[in-house]
Length: 610
Image (tube, rainbow, N blue to C red):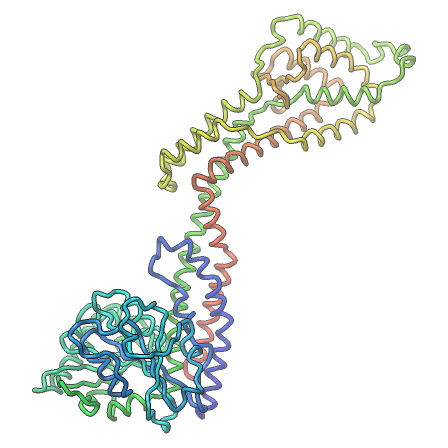
């Protein structure tokens, strides 16, 4: 395949991945917001965000970003200066010499290059003087650029050379700057002196370089001139042996090769200790047949770019897959907490609502409707009371007897007092249950007391009017089709008159109880008034209507208290946080990210041999 066709194939591959990469860039950070405490250093989309959208070229040739990377004192900036003929700070006694990265582009094509395409996500700024690189306050994202002369124009590529700050000094911000350029570079010249090649930090950075780069060149510097090649070979053999014995170097690259294998196949150069080092003093040791300068500019540009893109996608995808897996576990656990909380709140709300029912609100509705349908005086005059049999007279007598006895006020309570007493009990129950649970270990006692206290002394949830409208409509429909029921008006009025204000209710045994929408409530069950009301409603044919109204009343009060407890207790304590996590860990978003990862895996597998 010609270079032009290969370049088109790589760009087609990148275009095919773009939609799925964009899905991950857009949605994975939302998932990660709820996972940051568990995975503080993950940064799942950082690699993908800084991936070029396509091959960047000048004069129909691709640009390859090649970075000099290594620990302090290895001579990488000195060698960078030898290659580019620039004069970046190098070789000084005080370390680190620089605090920013510099990219040097070929002078011949600088006017044809858009460096923002080659380095997306970076703040590019021209280097006015070498001292620009010495500023410790330089942001991580800032990348200085300059040009170098006489770049070879017959190698089938243009090379942008990058000098990276040291990664092993006490200036930790330089570590981040070095890693950012490692994550972006197509190829890396890993420069290390013999006394630092086995340090833990050097090994960690080497592993990262092998994981991400399209190609890696290992350059070992400052070797004792005596037996220089033998010492370099011994160090290389030891380096490879250490990598093969390190489990982290057994992870695989996108092409299936292990990091240790990739290291062993990497071009290996060395140089003796020399205060006047030249490029000719950098010699090949393994996997290379040309001089160091020719090696830098003789890379297989398109193959290197493709490998780096595949590595970036693979590494970025793995981070996103890890995020999705953690998000699924967290989402499931979070949903369980929310469901458990909802169940506890609903149970508490039901206990607060109890079975009280506004029966005298019902009686007032019935009385009002019957009054509207009451026949004129003449018709009432000639309609004897006995027309409806002995049932009405029996109930009337029962009401008279009840109202004349001490039992008429038996079990009467004020609804607001009754509900508040129950609510206080439930608040205590809920807070103690939540604080005992390991799932809510961040509930501070003082904060719980403060929020619970405000709820306990605050207003109760008001009674809505939807229930009354619905029940009145149902009763009106029934009573208008049974006009003779007007004769019960006197019984209802007698009962209301004898009871006092009329805003009372009795708890009777018909599928729950009866209570009041007003200010009073009777509880205790099976009282004398309960029996009278039960008998009256049965004779009027309203038994099932009253039972249904009772169920709706209890449901309405339960719903009101459920919302009241949720909004004023659970949410400020912990539920708002759980709901925010649920919003961040939307199952549909997790699924779309998982699908994008799978698509990237399949596309990469098809294009790994372009």
